[in-house]
Image 1 (cartoon, helix red, strand yellow):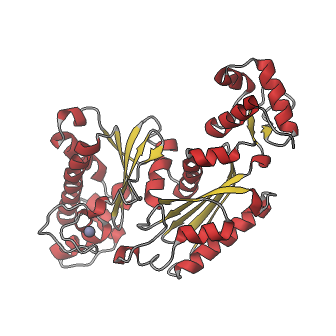
Image 2 (image 1 turned 180 degrees about the vertical axis):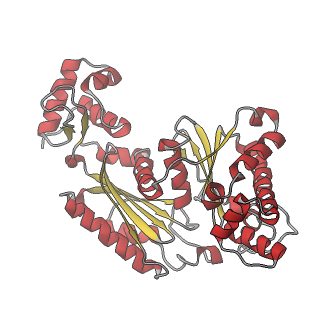
Image 3 (image 1 turned 30 degrees about the horizontal axis):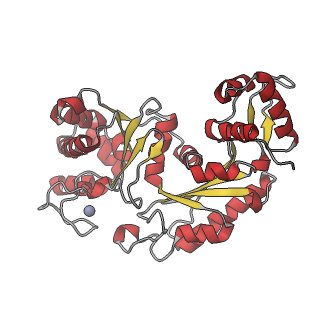
Length: 384
Ligand SMILES: [Zn+2]
């Protein structure tokens, strides 16, 4: 292949950053003539750096995208009972995406080996070798140091303790690995393709067995110094409250989570209930179930008032089984925040339920989008 000109490099960069683009739009964004773009793309297509997307066969109106010659990006995401691997072009187009369930409760090395094996299979199926991989996004459902990959000893990290997921995938594939927490990546997916698509500043809150959050600003997950932010479930609501798995007392997840709601219901009624039974009882206006659900929603709303006073988001998106399945939960949280937050914060704030359904595919694809916002990753695609 021949070396490419600065203008050609700018064109490739534009495709990588903005995604597939028509020639006329490229001419505008690069501030060159259409003839120049046509000449550039013709050469870049011949050299295998970019390709024409066949929306209209043979038409100059076809959008231009990144070709296999630039390499591919991978996203690997682990949730409690599944792992998802996505392969994509540098312009964000997904080539392959596959979710496999399990192996549940298996050692972390076994789970990582299974995901690495799936990634190799997808690389082969896409007709590219492992050498075409330029960078990998890794999302793990635990607290992990985003820079070093260390997982710290804690009960909440027990599924992953003792391994270094970042180093594992770096060693397996020899590419830079960018790490993120799975729940925060879900927030980015919701920002990009869900209810937050018009928000520049979004707080994502997932309420399930714990409470996790992700802050997305201008399409980038703000996860703090080492990826430790967003642990909303361990925000202290009452220092004299129930002891938490983290060792502190009165954490939010001791009031607002599936185990907390079921515990409170069992205490109030003397009867154990399944999660679906509890939700049915709330829907049926059972006084105990409804009171417990409303109390949890008000407590989450109060804690969110504090969070909103610190970060002033445009939209708060609530997701997870508690927000999705407990009737009226999101409305009470929203009303509590609006009632108690300072006017400047409250008057422009939206508190809404999440929209995305296929969380696996969208979230793993968000890992690709996250990579495409890293300058070192973008630079690695630009030919010399
Ligand atoms: Zn805690």
